[in-house]
Amino acid sequence: MTTIAENIQVVQERIKDTCERSNRDFKTVKIIAVSKRKPMSDIQEAIDAGLQHFGENRVEESQEKIPQLRSDKTIIWHMIGHIQSRKAKHIAPLFQFVQSIDSVSIAEKLAKTIIDYEHKLDVLLQINISGEASKSGLNAYNWKTDASVQSRLLQDIQQILQLPCLNVCGLMTMAPIVNDIEQTRPIFADLAKLRDELQQSLSLSLPELSMGMTNDYSIAIEEGATMVRIGRAIFGERNN
Ligand SMILES: *Cc1c(COP(=O)(O)O)cnc(C)c1O
Image 1 (tube, rainbow, N blue to C red):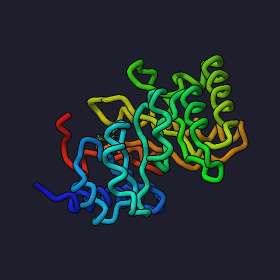
Image 2 (image 1 turned 30 degrees about the vertical axis):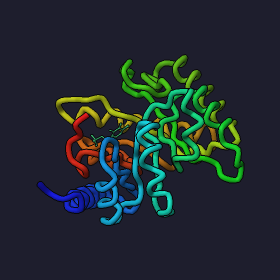
Image 3 (image 1 turned 90 degrees about the vertical axis):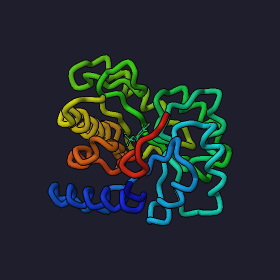
């Protein structure tokens, strides 16, 4: 058994190697340590090893965990899971960053809960590139060739951009589970391409690309990821 600190070091080395190979500055890649189902003691070990960004995907679990570390202002909590509309009101008080805006309606619900307009909530738009029905996200399957997918997507994104208290910083996606991880590359490349197109056609800046998890983060970084969401490689396997 390796310790969490050792695991983090391995991940950081691999990120550095990957960045070197692809001519990127490794400081442009943030590790989001996905701490779901893991105890506070594990999170504390990761903080002690220097990590600052943590990801959770369930509201109840986050309500248990996040307040315990509230006094540590350096930690940034990322919501990475699907948000049910009746739980939207709990999100903004807990998280600094929401990566899983997967519909116009959840964006609107979330926006309504933010009373303090001086603090916009940083968000990413979750995009379903692979077209898998099991994945949430704004549909972008075949966006390059399917004009109706493209116009619907643009319409949805424009509606979200109009919401005053959400700060849209970029895109997030989940690759399908595959046998050969090289098969994830076209998905990540496609998300990067979509980001470029959106920046152009909507004249806005979308600097963040959240893509890549334990199995495929190197490939995601090669394709431009600025955030990698890593659970098992840091904290070990989950039981549920
Ligand atoms: C669980 C989860 C991860 C982390 O997955 P690992 O394979 O443990 O690295 C990343 N992103 C999302 C959205 C998740 O739910």
